[in-house]
Length: 254
Image (cartoon, rainbow, N blue to C red):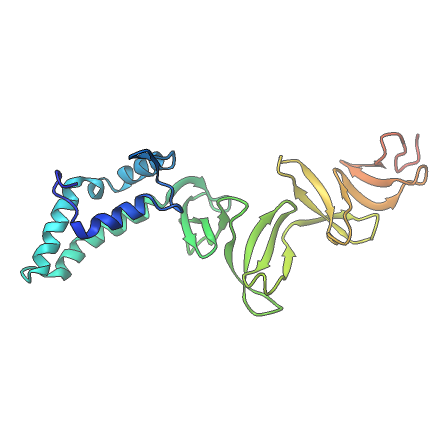
């Protein structure tokens, strides 16, 4: 840094602290050396791609010289910040653009960071307000209010599909499923939910979970097979017994 004419003795400690921060995990220490971790390479590629001018060492040197001039009282800081911020703001907007396409309007989506993590938002906002999580562990904000405590609800996705949950969790444990009702539980009579497994296979689970743990790979009708007592399912336009050992169909043929 000294050879490049950047940095100050007062900033060296801060720079080293950020590089070795355990939460960021940019580098690891091996003997006397700091070795970049895997996360560092795509991060640098991203910064160089969208913030090439700022990542240039000469930019840092020029900025430090300008800041020194402000500190000595010979330069207007308002102009320095204004000249820097406008192009920087445009770079920020461009860096958020992704190759993910909005499934509602077809516009590209941008990646935003909120209180509950990163999420995709349609670049066509406010005409299109579609948002979705980057991954299933991320909660995305909604404009809906929790009926129990008045806090805002967030959208999450778990092993039984999408659902709304109170942002005031764990103080408030209100949740409501966003999955589609399809079929009737033969055990308790509640509606079953059409959901997607982690492997991408559709299945049907009771909306009364965890009180009722009924699950079926085919849509249950809520009725029992008169021949063997197993539950009946709908497969396409055919209603048949869920038991592989029973060949009963709804029209009674066997």
